[in-house]
Length: 215
Ligand code: G3P
Image 1 (cartoon, rainbow, N blue to C red):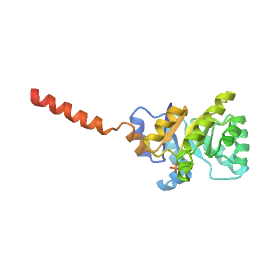
Image 2: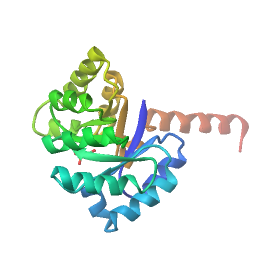
Image 3: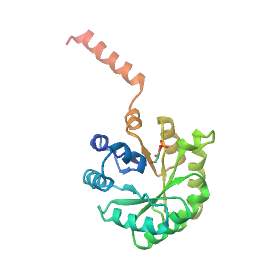
Image 4: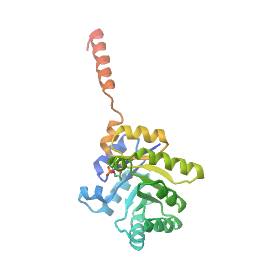
């Protein structure tokens, strides 16, 4: 399972990359807005640190605008993946970019048929948003399971990228459901190596050893 970090913060990206487990990065307009920096410049900085796929979202919502912005973003570095919304215009842009060998990540996916359609036009990644589905009282993980089943039924190559992950339990469930990739905020990446019994167990091992042998 690949692990991406979901942030546009360079310090977080560097710190996660130093752990040796990072396979890629996803960004979006809200995440870049928090950084108060130029989107293109930040993407270039991220691509110098991480060699795996770096998702760069378009701001335009019409086909022509998406194509223009997407082509500009794709020139930033060879590992840029153009992030497009799962709309009719996004679908058309996905098809055109796939034909031009530009990799895409179809975002804001909330139902399985969006995932089916974008796979048919060659999306590299599809991003179902688990947390936001849970937020409205539905089951985000069911969407991951349904997309996995549909892609396996027909041999679609599009990778299922679980997004809007809020806590470690989401991660466990995504791994069990067979998501190809999960994009995760930095705080959740850190939680993935934590357990209170690890901390208390470690403390006791060290104390017992020192009691017996000193030091
Ligand atoms: O990158 C998109 C997605 O991960 C957003 O997550 O927490 O804003 O729903 P969230």
